[in-house]
Length: 109
Length: 112
Image (cartoon, rainbow over all chains, first blue to last red; front, side):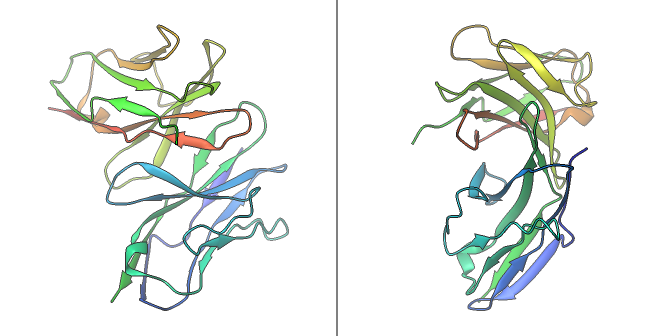
């Protein structure tokens, strides 16, 4: 079974502060991990996938297999980062995404 | 950049009516999906479709739901007899062999 846990439903930081959105997963194998962002209940937009190791909009995420985590980080949060963030996993077999509960990030001025 | 397109963006229907939600996946993608997001809740997997058949479905995807790829471009989700609890945002997604998952902008279904 594949499972994604985002322990924080809400996260509030001030502009310019570092931000970390936590994600832990459960999967017996080597999964693909993703972060999606959703602004104001619009479409889900791919932010990061672990295999590409890119930095998008200043966000990075490192897959830690020992801790089964894929936390999303940004050193200096901006107001436009306020959105819902979903961590998601895709395992082997027929590919499909399993989403976490999501974390609503609010960046205050 | 290629997009997944969904129509309509908003559908209001009476309880018991049939609805068809439409999606045009990215043309060279092979896997197609429907997800659902009830207001305030997380995104839930409904069904995946590959090689013209369902490859996996969740327990939400009961006999009231069906999917079809009627031609080379469209991918539809049909709900036979809608219930109030079917009110949600429905997202279509597609995936190629080497790509990530690309989502459409969603159809907001309201059952009254």
